Image 1 (cartoon, helix red, strand yellow):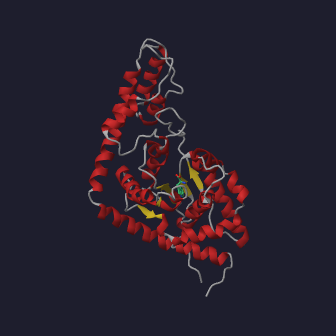
Image 2 (cartoon, rainbow, N blue to C red; image 1 turned 120 degrees about the vertical axis):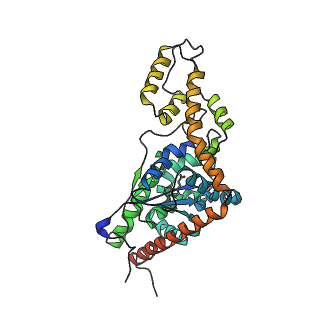
Image 3 (spheres, rainbow, N blue to C red; image 1 turned 90 degrees about the vertical axis):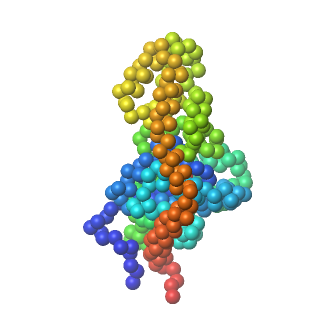
Length: 343
Ligand code: TRP
């Protein structure tokens, strides 16, 4: 007899799973894209956060030390923004062997052509310049991500919009497994994508990304925040304060849209900027104040936690143990559903 994980069907609370590659500290793009949602959701839902070190290796096999080091850095970012380990289990991906086993099984339910068509993977291959030398693990990481999601039976996955193709691919695998099994072994999930879209890089590129060097880290020092705001792109035709300026495509306003809580003050500011008579420096000063106030408590809490790595490790250990039990139950169910040999 297989036992499902202890979830009363009458109490079908959505289970939330999401994760981050451990390649560097998290930045403001992660904050608006997903971290803020996670902090809010942990109040009412069961949530697992995955430190995706195995996925990070798929394009960092040459630098495993970076991947290892950043497990702790990303964990510090989580805790510093308000993830509560009593409410959200933080776990280490590579210490959950059931994820690898599920990946191996799922790989048989996906074609290479389908993997090559995944638009996010395609774009990432282009950005990384892999051309024909694509690590097999990298091409297959959407399948591993399907294993992550389904192993927890997650139904809600808060991610940035670039991850939507992963969710779609995960649900395709789920449908194939369920069809093969003849009953619902795994639930499909839905992505929770913030409606504001993605935060541009400080250089005006479409996406904030550490590898592009256009990000503001959550742990950024006050001087780094000032420098980043100072170098932000505005409207290249707004030469004098008296000129009318463009708000659309102006990075400073994109950030104000994301972070300024005084919405009517912001609308007035935009109108003034469009009319002319408002210098870039004034707008930048407003943004800098907002970002300094947002990041100060995060940075301070992070520095406090970083002094006690033993405490952070104990959180990861407890979260990983909880996740191990959960993921192993699902693996047993999938093995049984596929009719694999069992002693
Ligand atoms: N691919 C995600 C990213 O790069 C990280 C990730 C790994 C993830 N496993 C996941 C996200 C499972 C959601 C669910 O941001």
